[in-house]
Image (cartoon, rainbow, N blue to C red; front, side, top):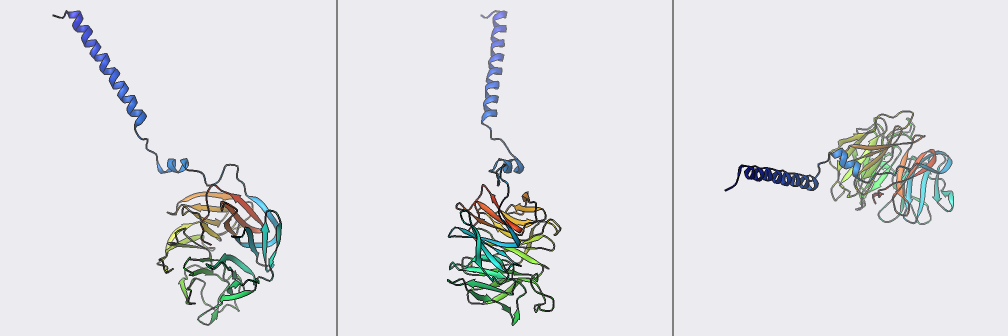
Length: 324
């Protein structure tokens, strides 16, 4: 038979044992339970798009108005100087040299699926360069009327060409079309208008999987998205995002995407980056208004950015989309 003191000791031991076990279980639970994070915290834990010490680096200057940068698969950058009527070539070792003169006041530059360099020319046409760098007209008219001033362009892998056609490079008396628009050109030469709601349609790009087409308006800063099927047919446009109205510090102009579907667009003050859902992720400031951008470099993780009289390089922690 237990004494009163023995009962007290036994009860106290049980209490302490229970408390100890509860503490161990609670600590273990705290150590192993998954921690919830908000979307903002999750985003902050991802690899940053740009390193903290990454700054825009001027690689070439002394131009009149640069546009349309394009990194050629052979390892060099080409870009337009529109008023100078020249396409320049740049490499790290050799610097800058004339690539094409005259250029037809070229703006955007890309490659077609066959590897030919293709120019959007303010002279009112889109042209392909042959093996001797002689321009061959791809398209110059819509329903018998001259195009305004093709600005920027992108190819679908099936050969469909999308391009913007504002009226920057054509006088009012010479303008034949009564609209500015976004065009689609098929491989069999059928040219159609897919959008006419922007006053100044400008930058244009495809998502990495080619299921989305993006283009922007210099006047409003709005970016529109269209779904694209495997045949290159585009659906109804929806508002995707906006960089704001143009001003003294820049405007919506060139656009590109990276391999994860983020969308990059020039805008007032610098370079804007949006998620694939249209959320603004980051803005990189530039001392001059910037006009266009292209992925390039040996690892395709560098952005080459045109900005009036100069060209910048900005190193990133992501990879550029393979869409030209």
